[in-house]
Image (cartoon, rainbow, N blue to C red; front, side, top):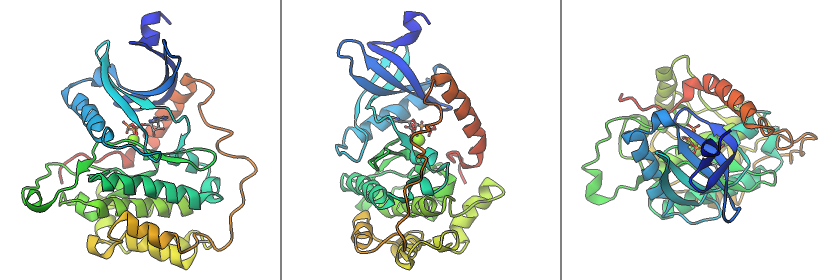
Length: 320
Ligand SMILES: Nc1ncnc2c1ncn2[C@@H]1O[C@H](COP(=O)(O)OP(=O)(O)OP(=O)(O)O)[C@@H](O)[C@H]1O
Ligand SMILES: [Mg+2]
């Protein structure tokens, strides 16, 4: 590889972490300091106005947020015509990858994981930002259960007072498996919209499955709107009644029937157990067998596979 292909400004691209459809995430080394960063770089073909605006927006959100539970985004910059974010590197799996071997992969340290994920989201809400794309792929998790929230592409400032009246969302944004009814209907969203999505994430963390599936994207969205709320105990009888009830309350169709905030959630969580019997650490850890860690090419192939696999669950951006 020539030097120019290997470098973006002062950053040497060391390893492709994830090759998505619009952006690539690279592990990179700053030449002068030798410090490591994660770069989220728009693909050359995608570096148009709207995608660039989304990346700038992500920086606007992230620069308000300073917490060990949230990935630090240092700056937005452009190098060789490629818009990018320079981020703290947290070279770990996202929760979706960690769950691919089944919920046992995380179950033995789930209390810590859930608490940290909830704290990150709660902190974001205290800064008046609503994430709006809460899903397992957007939490990074380390082998010892440290969690960091990422991906603020569609996050919005909480609407208050008069601004609620002037709310008009042209398109429904979010990821179908985790979208609250008000988000699907393009109504005003608030922290309880994230509480709903986080409830869906908790359901998946203990069962290995998203709460709803559908034959078509619309079928899936309709389940969020009107299907009865499933209990995680049906798929995992080691889940306590208290935790199952908490998760179900988060997935209430009407925001007013959910815990009012992530703080309310944390208060309840701290008084209950997730599992009846403490799950054992699996003999082979998913973190020891990280797919694709051997090389970027391997990662690219894996990710191409994933894109197909998750097709039904891509961000919904069409108006409904
Ligand atoms: N700071 C980071 N350190 C390590 N890995 C990261 C970091 N940021 C992102 N990643 C990895 O890259 C993936 C994609 O990042 P992100 O969610 O920000 O981009 P995206 O545009 O939403 O991509 P996708 O469409 O694939 O979700 C994450 O799920 C995670 O695996
Ligand atoms: Mg993402």
